[in-house]
Amino acid sequence: MPTPKFILELRQKIGNDLLWLTGISGVVLNDRDEVLLVRRADNGRWSLVAGILEPGEQPAVGLVREIQEETAVEAVAERLVSVESLPPSSYPNGDQVQFLDLCFRCRAVAGEPRVNDDESLDVRWWPLNDLPDLPARDRICIENALSPGPAPVFVTAEG
Image (cartoon, rainbow, N blue to C red):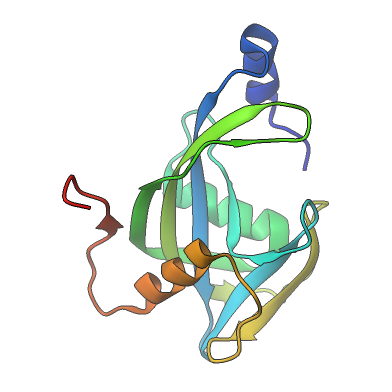
């Protein structure tokens, strides 16, 4: 998917300087103890479904939109799993970003997973006991989503 219009407009004003954005990610589960993962087109790695909120968009609504756009799976957000400030990063064109990520546990309700846009090379359900190589943060999000506690995880001054 191309860079959202609002980001392109901001980049015209600030160039490649650090841009603070709200990210959303989802641990999408089905009734077979599987999690929905995408193989990213930008780096070839498997990961959770993730995206960027549009201005004025509610986080759970935005994530459900991203899941459908990227995978053709319809889902509902069940609960907030974590709130986390991710480290700054840079894109190949020099754009610098930092995300405040809101991760949700979601339940699939319809649709068969498929590559539904240009952000992914592959999309599929993975058994929770046989996951591919994932970023450490994605594994932690999955663990938190599977925990029985309803409260989201967040970092405090004590760590």
